[in-house]
Image (tube, rainbow, N blue to C red; front, side, top):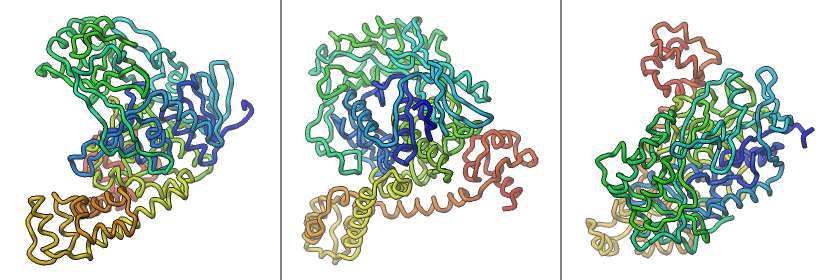
Amino acid sequence: MFNKIYDVIVVGGGHAGSEAAAAAANMGSSTLLVTMNLQNIAQMSCNPAMGGIAKGQIVREIDALGGYSGIVSDTSAIQFKMLNKSKGPAMWSPRVQSDRMRFAEDWRLMLEQTKNLDFYQEMVTGLVVEGDVVKGVRTSLGLEIRGKSVVLTNGTFLNGLIHIGDKNFGGGRAGEKAATGITEQLIDLGFESGRMKTGTPPRVDGRSLDFSKMSEQPGDAVPEKFSYSDMTKSLTTQRSCHMAHTSLDVHNLLREGFDRSPMFNGRIQSLGPRYCPSIEDKINRFADKDSHQLFVEPEGWNTVEYYVNGFSTSLPEDVQFKALSAVKGFENVKFFRPGYAIEYDYFPPTQLTHSLETKIINGLYFAGQINGTTGYEEAASQGLMAGINASLKVQEKESFILKRNEAYIGVLIDDLITKGTEEPYRMFTSRAEYRTLLRQDNADIRLTPKGYDLGISSEKRLRRMEEKLSKAEAFVGFFKTQSIKPEDANPILESKQSAPIRQSDKLFKIFSRPNIGIEDVRKFEPVESYIRDHDLDNEVMEQTEIQVKYSGYIAKEKNNADKLTRLEYVKIPVGYDYSQIKSMSYEAREKLKKIQPVTVAQASRISGVSPNDISVLLVYMGR
């Protein structure tokens, strides 16, 4: 294998690396996944869960494109919840609690069954670069493995430094050594680098907890699943999580260790994730709060290990233990391991193109936490896109870029490339201006055809999606044409405290009412007969209900997206000389020169570039 020239070499076996390797191999590229420990492929380094607010939409998008994260999330799930169900469908976000060991095992087995994919266990310490083109990687044993493209997905391992109180030591994850050599070489090649921080809570023995003092958090009564494929099924049994709470006593015990906290004594200089703060950061920033929620999450079906979500910390282990023991239900807690913080190198993502290829080195791609993101889902989506584009590069085909109105993945990558990030980037629904279009329920409709064209989503999936769409559209048409009489409609409307009708009206209008759902209209015999005669499943009925109730919002947002995306097609010439535009602000000229946006729309989203600067740019470009 060492004499072989691979099409794609993926460095790192986390969520980004696993998706990158699978995508490239499934597109027919000879692919090598190199990682420091093959036993830890797709390891859940932090919480044992996939999905959540906006993150669930990303997993659905990965699945629709042909990635593996959705399938593995289903096969290893121990609980399913659809979050934000009380809000509109643009906010609904699926989430699964996972069996940590099964998750990693299922990923490993799926990768082993993927054609065109080889594996090698060793640390990559550098790249083989000739001129401005990557030619392969070098390992700690001095081996040189040649490749036509390289995807770096190093996670938190680049010069990783673990902090627990006043102790620190090198490591990329608990029990694993840091990766060295790559950062230094990239800096020598002209890249900018920075440091970021993330953290994780203690893991505890569930046998030592008193769950009767906590509130149970069960999964959905009727659980769904992540993957659109028929390879997986919804859960029939689930494990519950539990909720506990901190108190003023807990906070005071934590404060006693602040002088030994690396966050407060200056040893940690880098920024951590704003939306997932450590417990010491929370009680410091929100000093008026008497209590914070803790979610006590099982790590699997059979293990007694629990993850204390909400208690991320780098305080000394004795302080962690003393404070957690003061939480109700944790009086006799036994630790499996303490929480810790980790600092690691990242590279500001403005140094990449939208294909995730670096601007400095041809054929070199970055994905995941190396780009300043946080979260399994954000990493996996970047890995998928980097793997796709590395493969397309070798095949001498045009890059695959998702626009902001096409996918959350498109929003994520565009934000990184055009705005950069100085703190770990996390996806939220609020970041997507077209979130009514980018719902979790229609990711297959939006993206399966694209995945099929790329060769990573099967024809079977495409036909299944087309059938779902066809049935939903026909069902919407039925509601638009079918009328109902007052004597049939009013008893049901009045039972829902909805105004009665005085003359026959279209079912579409009745169904559009906010307090009338699919279960209500199914009480009308023509509707139930249609469902029975056409063999409609829950997916089709949900899609129909959304299209009926939100048709006006969807049409309005689509119209806005069409208007705003016209600038996506106004290309800026490669190497455009912004210094000639004296009437543009100095900041805008500098930012545009540095980031080198491909389109005017991308330029408009760069921080520091005003609408007036864009108008001036269009004038100079002859628009």
